[in-house]
Length: 327
Image (spheres, rainbow, N blue to C red):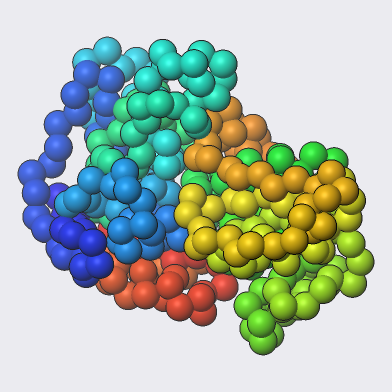
């Protein structure tokens, strides 16, 4: 097998030939068909996630075919298509796992962070944490749904019944969330990097009622603001934009420091929430609505060997949608 390996913080990914891995009990070996590049992969590369184990093969938006199964696996047969998301393991014993909050597990495992991920031709995954996928799905189009879609879905669910939704940062996650909002009958206001007219046009093409820079005020108060850009300065801006009783939900795993802000922005029963990881129930519920909502991902495919180029394109913010590696 070929893997693109991150050997240390800040390094370039390097190709490495390895023997095909053998699945342990409870695991499956997956032949990767596509793996999207996520903002979290940049945090892994930049050393911003202390749980990361180096060297590591990044990638946690994986679509592939089960090639071999380990002892005790009966739920995934060779030849079936599955997805591999960020959450790769939960202990099942801690208070969070025991109360249907495995995303907060005390002893979790994360694909492409604590265990090798999908920037490779093959990977191992715990069978119980793979997601069954329809054999007719397009792997490249589906790959971004495994994190940008799932985290976006979990973030949106925290919005409650909000009618007006502000999306701060219009990248891989927001372009999916915007389509779900449109299907649900919500109004979307997109707030992009200041001056990024192309991103604003992209947002309007996906149904946004208004699009402008994150340094602008939306045309009316928001019921909820969903922040996908990892910039802590957006939290006070979003609090200023939401109405009384509104929510600001931070959808990323890492964010720069939030600057001090006056209590007046929080007062009025406004709330700031964070999203941590995802659950398998998130995946089940999300993939049920994907065909009903008519979600279309916007992608650019790169050969696996050009993983560094795909990462750089994602980092630049110039992509409209997601970069996807194809072995």
